[in-house]
Image (cartoon, rainbow, N blue to C red; front, side):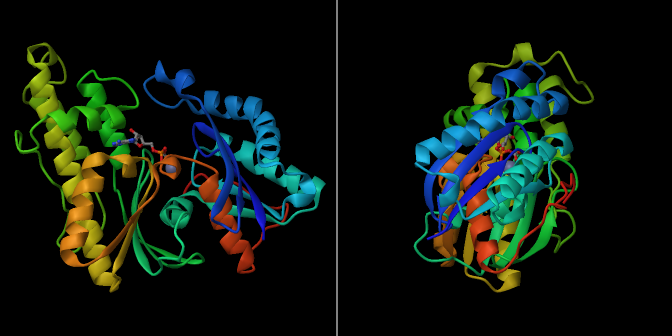
Length: 338
Ligand code: KG4
Ligand code: ZN
């Protein structure tokens, strides 16, 4: 049995987990910074990195206590080394290096997107690879082909907004608050997804890239009038806002689902996995499940607890990579881009 301590600080969640054998999550603690950023309508990088510094040590101690672990029980340290906010990543990477050095443990930097792409496997009895992986979050929207934990290739990604970012911006256009994804999701359940025909940008015929900025602008002009960016919200009834949320969600999820099925078809795989914060979206979950069932594809949706940023997925992927002989030394660097 191998216990891996995972650390995730790539954006605005400070998270520490201890996971046995890549799948038994002994603890997964996340200190959210939601209240610190909410009033700015988005994550402020400087505030995020300062908060990670203030919280990380105590969270490691709490996780070790909850899991009943002494340093001698830990077999390796896995940390998100990118992509993400550079200041935030540096806090986690520096802490992981310090622990690996002082406890004399193997160290591994883990790719945040690869961890989302493999997070659906945490609770599975058998590894689902090869699979097409859809990673949809506030910062990323990517399709990947996962042949194994250390054999992951990028098939496509967003050329502008991430899907979660589009949810957050539409919530802001509609005055619904931040982060918008869960609120738009809830309102969409009460609305008619066919009420408004919003654009579904597919890009060129066989592209597996995404674009959501046109859709966001279409919602903006629908609300305020063509070419206008303000003034239209007061005239909308609550029911109409529900309809806009449902129609917008149908457009986003429609594109995500078509491209994910195309990625699986083109890669010749029969399994789809979905991870990232937007994987919590109820319309995406329901519609993708029925499309996969109709096409005879296996679908593994990441358990809700591991959809948003968390250290369990970092520890889990870290375990599988360490087992396959990958490791870093104290020269490990954080990188902001993919
Ligand atoms: O993976 P995550 O926690 O952080 C990033 O790495 O970005 O994802 C957060 C994103 C936010 O944009 C949030 O609005 C979105 O995921 N989100 C949702 C839902 N829950 C969270 N979007 C749509 N429907 C949801 N239920
Ligand atoms: Zn993420």
